[in-house]
Image (cartoon, rainbow, N blue to C red):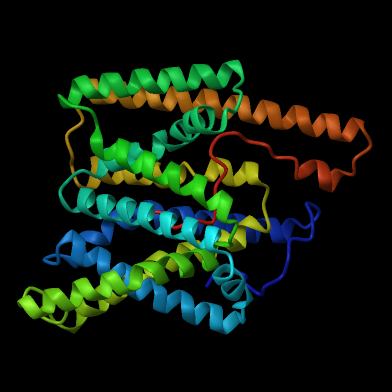
Length: 338
């Protein structure tokens, strides 16, 4: 459960206690997402696809229980009466399935650093997709950040001897997922429930097929291992609940900065815990990515500050001005992370 969770709403910037609770939940959410590479190897010898299928099945069970507890089911009937939104949920479920599967496979095959890169460059990919698909206009600093990010990918391509496919797949799949989610307009738990409901039958069918072939790992490695596979639902839902508790208590600008905690932790785990190789050209590529993100963050904070001053000068009250966080780095969504 989120820290200090009582279902209360954010009462404004004057409530320092509420903001502290929000920050704790934000750190908890992104901290869990950042440390999740420690969890997936515990599920071996199950393969990545079996782990993915368990994650889908058990996540639905966890979020269904959570929604029953808080009695939040009215959205389901509305969604079923809107075929277009339901179709978008199916697209989101497909894209996040790819994202989850690639991430689990990457971690369990020794590519934690490359997976972390995917979430570092995700804000840059989101901006690029906004320009290409939504015809959004960028400020000069944003163009510069995207250009530096493109240069980083070229450097890493030279370093790896091929494009960083894992990173690109994770970044583009999650950016696409975020784009689709904005059109669906569902809350975090509701969205996860709808998506895993679509994933459930194919995932269950795959697990039953594995069992029929005698290849299902679940239940063959002891009760502890089976419990860990079942815990994939908790690992998926817990940080999402904490994120939701943070989102109603702290400004989007704060969450926009906290989002980098997850890939930073993943990168550190890859280098320091899993001892993955980091030759000079790879360091150079990451340095360019970090430079691009620093420029993007500086520009976003400057724009947010100017907007707040403009609102205050126009006589808008302080609380409304504080909520004018218009960071164009990927605004964190209440969406399932790796």
